[in-house]
Length: 235
Image 1: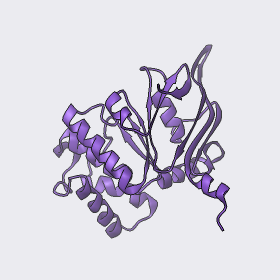
Image 2 (image 1 turned 180 degrees about the horizontal axis):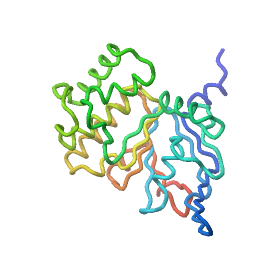
Image 3 (image 1 turned 45 degrees about the vertical axis):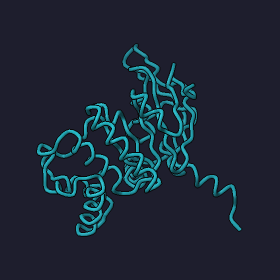
């Protein structure tokens, strides 16, 4: 007989508890986050909205283990990030998280296929299997005929779809997106929105997206607004 408490715990992909972030430089002290609390369930989609400069990107970097917090804790699939070494945090990121940014951050000297293979190779997957998995996902996002093209040979929408494939190729538990369509025109943005939501349904990956786009936020399961350093349900 299964333990309901264990099942409930396994259903939580990410948890932020009393997260605070203060930047200090000399006598200057800037409080960005004061008391952020939320949980993300497996397969859930969450939008984080708020005014420019409210700390949305800082929060995303903290929960992704890319920045340190001043107070509080972030847990990713039960691992408390502040208690891990840099190498251990790197392994958690590679195992559990994917990242999509406003600018694709593809490596310019590598092809689309090589870029999407990269997270698998870092994980230790052999080259033939990495290429097989990357090809399958690139075909899924409509880039099956662009495998050998470098980023400079792809359109803006194609580059971002390649970035989505790279974020999802390891089948992470959660993808963190920082304005992932902010650099695209309306048609390409809509295409990438649809793609992310389809992959969420098919793979079961959770998404946390920082966005200014109210249309995208409205399609997520929940929307939280960052205001005065705290997250609250968007009414």
